Amino acid sequence: MPRDGRPARLRLQQAAIDLYERHGFDQVTIAEIAARAGVTERTFYRHFADKREVLFDGETGLRDILVAAIAEAPATLEPLPTLLRSFRAAVPLLEGNRRLSEPLRRIVAVTPALRERQQAKTAGIIEALATALRDRGVSAPTAALAAQIGMAAFSHAAAAWWADPGQDFGMLLGDSFEDLSTLTAPLAAAPESGARLS
Image (cartoon, rainbow, N blue to C red; front, side, top):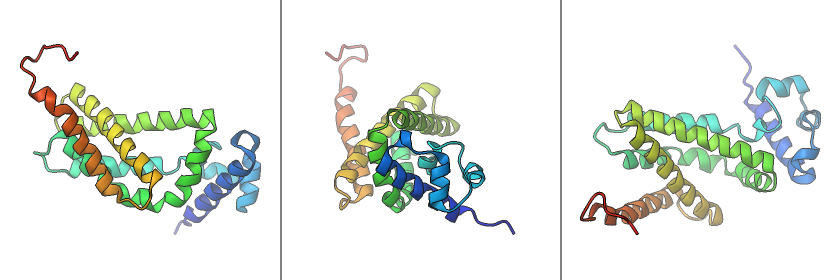
């Protein structure tokens, strides 16, 4: 039976975060991360491609949860409610990872290379959401727009949650998507579909 590598991954993540917070991302080497975690560099590379990826380990799990929730949503559910259901399915994962995520956010905020990687990861999740919606029969343009808007609503709720972790993340998501409905309602009442908005 193969050995469970999760403890080593967690030690490497914690070691990297501790060192990045203390010395700055650019000043820390993979050898230092491995030594602090009590493993070899070879073990590091078995788990992570580089010293940036050690901070974004949860992205794949998050994407898988979101995509699975979209696939399992009732066929009659419209794109945005489907995305709300999807993001709510990921709340337990996000709450469970908060201990590591809080220092990660601080490190990313002061490190341009990590901000770029985070933006690329977010773009990947948006594309995965759009693909999952297309698989449900949503047209490609609508799926792409819904995925972008849905991620924006999620990010808005997440920002409120980070500012006040005592709030219920699921309720914040609901409020954020409800705000979307309020913002778009005037468009539905527009007298002409081709009328200018300004």
